[in-house]
Image (cartoon, rainbow, N blue to C red):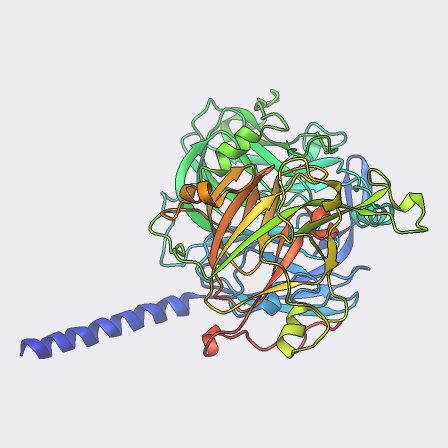
Length: 569
């Protein structure tokens, strides 16, 4: 009798599990959106530009979803440039066709054409964002993705009274496409931006900007959740709010063990979720962001963008807001203290054994001026042209097919599978590097991974031309950042520093200036996934590589077939 009772209770438990998973599934929604990429008149810094926007909005629309929801977004290109949209940080499990990077997972959407992106948010909560992934269009084509917990779930912290999104951006008093075209022609570095922005507005410290400065309301005694996104094109940024501390609770749509700090540092591509308390004297306080500029001697935009945290009881008060003391532009100690504070909650599934161990250098370089070229086309130092590479390979985008099409359909001649797992030459990466190593080779080289492979990548910065902090973003995956440090990575001494207990889960890692970072992930998502520096000037110079992950066994480990409306090259 006892045995049959046990069987009945087992069956009952099974039914309960099935019912709860079905209930969770039925709560999931499908959100339909239309994105029209178009020219829009945008006035900033006293001048009106015809900027490329989505739906005439700058920044573009915020997408609000719950974990488990699906999105169907039809992008219509009414602009004069090719465009693609990347859903930054979305895992895109089996839906690599919807990832968006131009010539990697799709051909661009030509002017007058359209493409519908279809994907599901699965197992991610927090803040991500979307942006153009074609030339420099993402200077103005971007917006937030807010992922709430499943409807039956809650935050792992007390529910905030209010939520707000802070998107840090970068503004050129020119057409950004013209800026990068001119730099490509000259071989030199592109002009730096003229302003930083918060939610598209430069703020009080710039000409013709005060009347539109963003205001974020605050009530005494309340706790607000602020989702901070660095959407700047080429600059890491410090962010502070005068007299207020942040409790960091999430990053890149993963929760973290809460920690307190007075300053954030985000590389382009990164997001940070923070709680702030209305615990100061009611008044007006500046939120401010300015550059963390780690490249010695390199020009950068040294201006400061502001918004105003305004206590509701202080509304209408004309007193000047209090300004926070921001770190020095080259304050690597503050940047490092912040990036090394992140830890995962719970027991993360960090790969303990490794099948694929890669060591990848990342840095700048110079190409010699081609014979008979005009001096005006070789304006990098010593009559050269700027370039960049990983493991001495400067990545070249294909043009006739996307890498995913070539991989899926077996089209030869589009890429080669000989991306090196180690630098072709061992050298003092962060020391005085011989000029003979400054010129990389060019190629569309990929590294193949079997489905389920446990992968470790040691990312090593170089000091070629100049060392700097590089925000390295991997598409299609979150990864654990198990360690970071300065100088040359030494497997004998640095392996002991690996955190395999509670490392943070990220999609973009800050590779320290003149230093290294180690990431781990399981290759459980088939497709072609680019890993690149998220400073757009560097990706254009070739600071990128691509992982090609094979299908596994069965439907759930296999890339979905290509959509019927996939753009053609």
